[in-house]
Length: 250
Image (cartoon, rainbow, N blue to C red):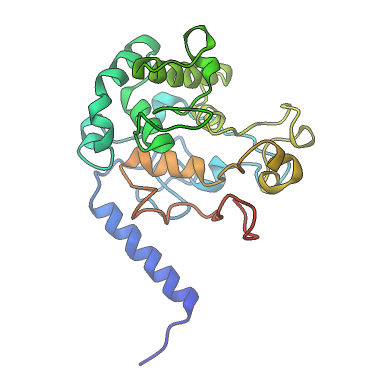
């Protein structure tokens, strides 16, 4: 019996996980407007474009987000999300629907953001509390409240503001929600977010290193109905513990 090398074993395990995840989630189809798009989700590609495309510039002179309109982003339906990995979010549907009406953002986008940010835990704490995990500056009157609707509205308001500032570019808006920045922001020597910035002295001074898997995980993971925090954590190629202690890239 031949002995498989560890690298081959890892590759086979990844392939098996990919196949299993695809078979249990609705088919969405690849986005013809996104470069490197594939019908199936793999560790580095998916229906909304490849990770390399979403992360354009990360390995060079800084993040230069390609353009993808929010209306062109592929995703499963809200019912599919609630009946699958997004089941913890279903109890907050009224809040997502209200914010959707107010800010004209699809409620499934809001539910996915809440799932990614807090696992849909309205009691999540920290400096950016609640479901949407945004700063108090985005609340009515710039002050945090105990209202779940205020929290969802604050997160939606912030996402919409970033979408408008990016000229409708969903990739840039999703990145901004996670603290990504482009050239001209004044950070990282005036460059956009780079592969080395999360764990640089400046990167550490500005908080927890940003996960460079983020865009791929959101656009090709959560929005496809895959559990990025659970059995589908193989999605993405930048793996680290976000403490900069393990020597890997975030």
